[in-house]
Image 1 (tube, rainbow, N blue to C red):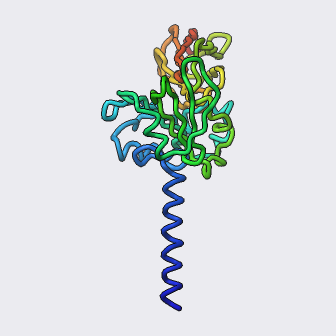
Image 2: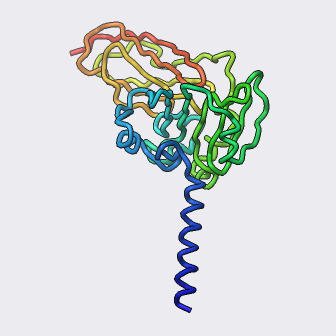
Image 3: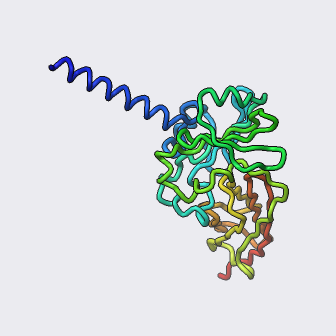
Length: 255
C-alpha cells in the first residue's frame, strides 16, 4: 500500500513538472510574466541600464525585451501592479527564417487574421506569437503563458497586436511647461503616443539630470544649470520608431 502511494505521489510530481514546463516555455530561461531584468543580466550580461530599450544580438538573432517599468502604463495600468522590472515580452527576429512546419511539431498553433503578405499564429498556452511570411517564421514573440497572463490582462488582451504590420507610424507628442522655468526647479514632461505593447519610451536631455522615468512621464532636475535653452527629446520605439522634441528656456535663479 505504501509503495502504491509513493508511486502515485511520484506520478503527480512528474505531471506537475510537465505542466509547469508547458506553461512557462519562454525564451532561453526568460519566461515573460515571471522573469525580471536581473535574470536577463545574469543570463546574458545585457540590459543592466534602465535608461534605454533592451536590445541586443544573441547567436545572430536580434533580441528585444520589454519590461513592466518601460511599458506605457497610461494604457496598461496593470504594469503598475507588477515588480518594476518584470519581463513582459521577448521579441526574437531570427537571423535566418524558421520553417513554420518545424514549429507546428511542438506547438498547438491557431492562425490569426491575415496581415497583407504576412500571417500570424499563436500558441495560447505556451505564450508564443509568430509572424510568418510564405510559411517561414520571421519573428517570434514570447509573452506570458495563459496561466500567468491574468497578472496583466490589459497588456495581453489582444495577442494579434504583437505581430501587426505597421505601415504608418503615428506621431508622439510631448507636453511640458508652457513658459520659462527658473534654474534649480524639477520639471515634469509627458509623452502621448498610440498604445503599442512593444513600445518603450527613450528620453534624452541636452542638460540637467533625469530623476525618474515612469510610464509616459519623466522628471528633470535643473539644479546647477545656468540660464540656457534646454532640449528634451522623447523617442517612442516599438513596432516602429518616432520621436519629438521640446525646447525650454531656463531663466536665471533670482538671489
